[in-house]
Length: 157
Image 1 (spheres, rainbow, N blue to C red):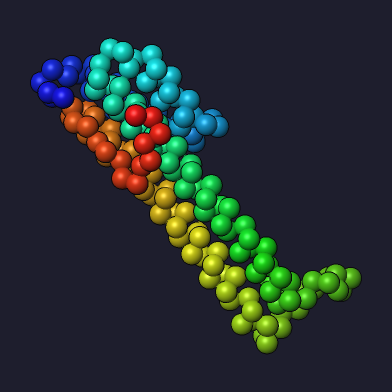
Image 2: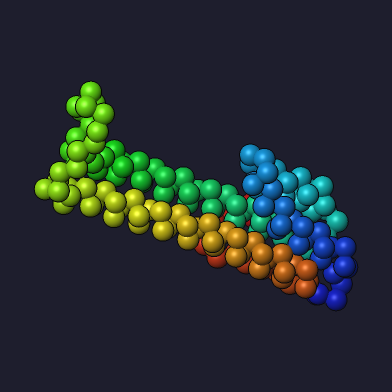
């Protein structure tokens, strides 16, 4: 694509396509609905807008897929290792209204914390990647450039 043939309106619309994915913080699935509506209503007018719409939607679907995978991987770890936590904290004797920590059971509880911390750090990394790449893509679009999101599965070609 020749950047000199891209109008200011197309550049702005390309940037708005990427920024619209932040609408997920205001309403459910906004990161899919807002860019999809913008892309579908404007994709015929410009190959530049068409490419940015595909990029934004593919990246959001990829991030969702990675997040679901992390969540599904974390669930078994949480349930299998939670039994160590139950052994660590004596909560079965709930009539005494106090929690008893047994220092001898700490070794069984530490892997639970470690695994959950690892999943938490990876999830935080996905969150930061999403924000960083979305802002970078919007800035590139406003300059008339195409941005290829990293780690994106191309569902829409």
